[in-house]
Amino acid sequence: MAQFDIYPNPGTRKVEIPYLVSVQNDHITRKTGAAVVIPLRANAQPVEIMAPLIDVAGQGQFVLSTDEIFAIDTARLKAPVATLSTTDRAKIKPAVDKIIGEY
Image (cartoon, rainbow, N blue to C red):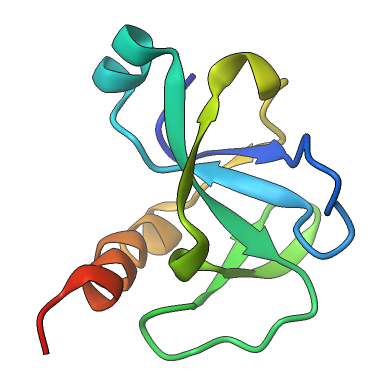
């Protein structure tokens, strides 16, 4: 499982959250059997820095729902459908920092 791979959502809310993007370091994922993921929401409004638009190759744009970050057992994730571009990867850290940063 590679960091920044995009997976179909194995859960029940596939219409509103069709994809999950793995953001955890591969080294940690291999040791724990779980991956930290951020949902990609369809039909949601982007929010500057915290919830940017992300391109999923061949599928369109989705909102990175950073405030819904969670861990999932890697056995639940099937084959990735895409990998984040370098441009979209650069949006992850500022989004997470916005959620957990001090104000």
